Length: 597
Image (cartoon, rainbow, N blue to C red; front, side, top):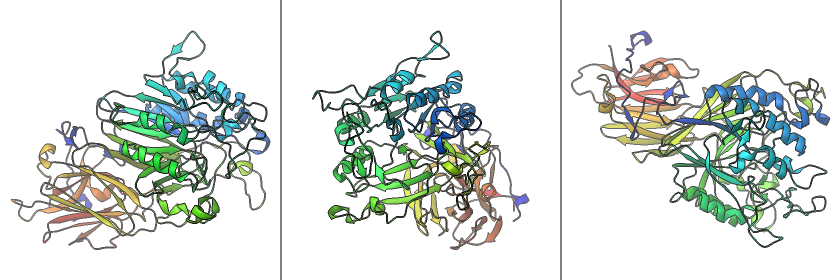
């Protein structure tokens, strides 16, 4: 069977297809999330924006007050083009922790404001580093980002007010003040929460801040830091009641919830966490936090601090809960390298610290030394995340930024290049109660799903994709079904499987060495000696051969059943077992299609 012999079928009449219990068009077109439903909307997420060259050298004057404005100004237009409703930045707005840095960062959100797009920041450790200011950037953030308190933003002067972009139900954490012994307002608009969207696709965002405040660290020059070297403020434990109350899925009235903080719950380069110490510190706090997020259906924990793109599944210390963590790519002149898995910050000390806590992490995806950003699409019960980063990458850090040479002590130019952003990865999940399956695929493992008369086997073929520490990457996948009769295409010989999370990880470029095999049964009754192929929906809404949308590989037809080790691009069908199969590295809506023989 040659590719030109494969019949393309148009998608006419698909507008009413029921996918996973809600009406929508197929959402995957070459891995692209299509916001099809009337209530679908998007938001953006970006990482740290420090300008970190030596002495904040800024030859072209585009990065004042230690803010990487030359990078921000290249990312903002992409958020505008994607039509996001607002952008959240996960801390380290500047490098020096000075009010001038907060003012500069606010000024470089103006392009978003002008486009009607909101901006919600949070503090990172660098917001607390001012050598002269003991307020830890709190008054500056409250003044120049009043939206974190649900207040009006004055756009281009006080005569042009803007609302907080339809965000609502704002709340700030009020832990007990150690000075007064009463609930405090110190974290007003600093550790905060808000909702966005309306029923049918709404989200609660919880922004968690554990950094110093004047009352928790009144003498920053002499305060006693924890063993990891960072001074902390109101702890996760002190704020856990507020966290529980705001995330409570029985009362929050939102389908989705995301938690964002600057520090990861388990990092790759840094070994400190939001739990006021190293990864092995305060394990009871960790168990309570993980349990709260899992019980309340939090989709992702999102952080910065590490200046790299990393996705992982992290298990709680007691093994009873797990979270998917996204560490955001750098939007800074600084990039980090993952530390050794045996570094002592993850374990190796006395007593309870002897077990290295990295056993709790399953690595899914990683990309280093590049600038990137994220677009989240909320479409009813489905959330799709797209990761974009510079196609060149391999940028050097700080004193060698962007393309100096550390081995020869050649300083960088300190001038930001023109980035060429491309999509590197797509993933997501569905909360639909109709037949959604979530599963993890390790190297060489498989998972079987059944729906109606169709059985599908998803097999990870034992690829070689690995992270910096040589850990083979796993896949966090979700799948759900649509009945073939709801699609209304006479050539479908199976139900339709939506598979999310099978795409190759964001190793640059999307790698051909981490594929999955999809083996799907078909119904040949009344079809005689017809030929069959595993199909998928292309960017024009046509059913095409599933391997046509692969990244790399060679399309190769094989007569007979799938066999382990079949290379990317292999496809075929087996009349004896009534299965069609393909080896792919993309997410799609898959179905077996009758072809012209």
